[in-house]
Image (cartoon, rainbow, N blue to C red; front, top):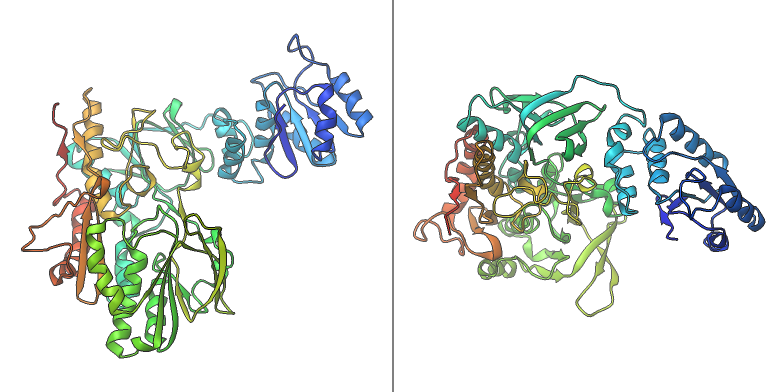
Length: 557
């Protein structure tokens, strides 16, 4: 017997025996619910035997038998009522625990988010894919809603989603495509570093979503609740069902601000800021302008994160501003990085270290931000150096730029599309799902070991378009992704170290060295970042113009 917790008040298990009751009591349970009909199996004890042993041990017992595969809405309501009336914690059981987990999932549907329910059952080892529509529908069996159907459905209208739609339309204008995203505004997120450095205005990084959806593409302005890949279906909030022949998944990732205790309450005040949010990037520049002395901390959480260079970009542009004002000598700059290296591709580190020395910044590796008290101007870091016990330290600050922990979105993490870590599980060369061959993914949400950057999505979108259309023609994948990503490291106002690399840290420069040597700070790279990349994004990448993004063909062996 293995008792698997769904909540602090409920665990489920496979069939129990009367001899297990004392163990159940010793584990702290005060009641049991039997969800298995008597006589279902030849080796199954009756509920009366279990109930008698439970009463003897001082436990309450309830009988709510469910025939396998026939959990009704009324059954879920009765289970919820039993949980309310019985003393907790409660252990529910059936043959394997699945019926009990299903009853709880449906009973909780109106009280918890779909993602929370699926996460709890998945962690306990139960797959609720068969009832996900009912969970989304508040625990009730949904009626036929006349579901929409498209040749291609794209989840996410960020850089990856709109680019993929535009690339597909450029190749096959009559293709029926729907793109699903609830957002009203689309952001050019690579520009927020420049906003935090006083170079761009925040409003120049935002446009209405409707103005960017490619012509002829249907925009379904809704959030995705779940996936049914075996049925070629996406379930939306409100239990609307969208069917597809082929699916592209690219909703980005989740910034997990709540993972740092006290952070949400102090963001945007008390000297705590982040360029990872549109509304906070201007506050970064405000703090930089105000600070003339004291300590400035810049944090970086454990990988993976999007734009891994962004935390140190904020440091460099702030340090440059203080240097130009003549106050740098009065400011203690600390870079507290949960990882063990300044940058993951060693070829670029020497140039970056020149600026670390210029700004007299202290590099604190293996320092992970875990808590902050804004009004007290204090932060706590767990220091986890190799072969050393984790130690928590307290650090005071006058300004702190935070890069938040990042995960896959909840509805992805608990879906059948995810790997063990929660990211969409793709073949890293073709970007096709490893299990479902009519699904592709690109951008920050998938698990290929590349840098999560807009530059990566720019290269990935045409590759996905090529391979999806090849599949429609009945052929094998024709384009391959080499892991390209780019990180323009803004080391000072007017100069950038342009890091471009692929899988395994292989350098993949876009320009000859006499134009831009990415390993050295360059004014040409700054011009590219400030003047060229925004129009390339808005007018090229999102419009299906694949400038410098021609898909690499798969060559025959």
